[in-house]
Image (tube, rainbow, N blue to C red; front, side, top):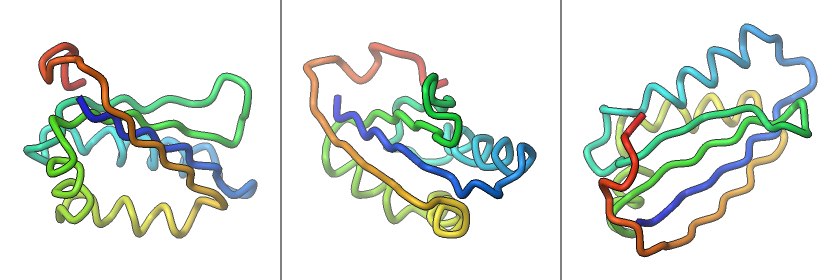
Length: 103
């Protein structure tokens, strides 16, 4: 599996409603992008302004397809509006693509 991990640091003025909507936007990618095998969205346990995203793909080609997929474009646009920092990490593990459920 190729794991795409993203840390989103949100603007301090973002409301709880806007944060929840953003988290739902991220989680809503499940089932919309064929190469996306795993999605989890969660708040940081030690940074109140941070949301984390963990996604899984079979390979780099799957990640590249995800990046340009029409369902992902609104996420990119919203991130530009509400995040002060975005940190990405991509790693590969020997896990099979069906090791974990999509959602």
